[in-house]
Each structure stands twice: as C-alpha cells, then as structure tokens.
Amino acid sequence: MTALNIMVGEDAVRLLTDRAWQHKDGRLVKIQPKVMTCARLSIAIAYSGRQNSGSAGTIAKWLDDRSDQADVLAGAADAVRLICDDMMVFDAVVESHGRPAMPRSFNLFLALWSRERGRPEAYRIETKRGVAGALQSVASYHWPPVDHSLAPRRFDPAAARVLIEAQRRVRLTGGRYYVGGGADLTTITKDGLTTETLCTWPDRIGALIRP
Image (tube, rainbow, N blue to C red; front, side, top):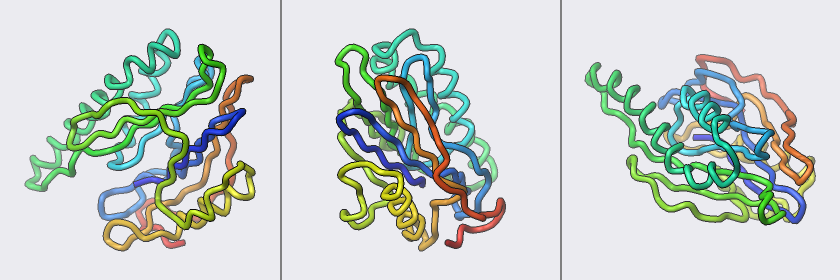
C-alpha cells in the first residue's frame, strides 16, 4: 500500500506520495521516495497496490532509456511487465519457503507535461493478478480514500499536507497503518519537473507505523 495522490490542474500535474515500503505484515522495511522521474522528458511514474521496492530502480532505468514522451506512453505496458517480472522473482523465493505469494495487482500512474498537446496530463494502467489493462487518462486520484472535502480543488501546499496527514491515519489491510516515512510533492509544469519534501515522520525500520 502507499499514499498516492494525483492532481491535474490547468498549469501543472502534481503527485503527492509517502516514503514507506513495508512487509505484508505492516513492518517498515525501507524509507525511500516512491516516484521515479525523468526531468529530460518531464515525466514521473508511481504505482500503488502491492509494493516491491526493487522495482523502483528497474522502472527508473526503463524511463531514462526512453527516447521521448510518446515512447513512454506507447511502452507503458512494458513497464508493467518489468514490475511483474521483479515480483515473480520475489514470489519464487517466498513460495520456496512454503508461503503463498501475494497477487500481482497494482496501479501504475504516469504524469507529464505533454509537449505535443501543451498541457499537464496523467494516465493509469490497472493491473490485476499480473494482467495489465488499457492506458486510461485520469484527472485526479487519491489513495488511501479520505473525506472528499480534504482533496484540494485548487492546489496549495498547506492543503496537501492536511490531505496526506489524514491519509496517514487511515487503517488499511489488517487494521494497520501504511502511510509513513515522509511526504514528497512532485510538480510538473511547462517549465520542468521538481520534487520537494513536505514533511517527515519519526517511523522506524522494522516497526509498525503508529501515527
């Protein structure tokens, strides 16, 4: 699980994410940014659902190897397959110890300033049990779900902080908390891509998140 928010405005697309990578029992195994970016292409990638921190480097390299924005959008299903391949390797180890693997289900998101259309855009591919769906345009997305009044209609950093603090206190699988480590805001405009840290939290590796 992860905090993932996408907001497409008139002049920018923004991704608000946390930094917690966890074991399926909720224990924190790594604190690391979750958005893979390419400033050269003004594109960012993030995904929610089943986690695999090892895929972050794989996707970052894949993104950096793309020639242009059209190449990224046309090959988004390839990025999904790379994530699934990483999960299969991990699953083989899990199953060799007699434990069941988790379903390979997640959502992949791409955010960019379209140089062809001159506007901010975001796209999503939903993958269920390793099978990727079609690339779909999205205007906004918020996970974990919170009161709609907390999702800012017009972006401002204070509202973003309130939103992710509320998401941090949402109980998910097993009644546990999954949003932690810190919050990063990635902004893409016609002038380029930036990432800033909105806040950090005192979560500890090896422990459960306790807001």
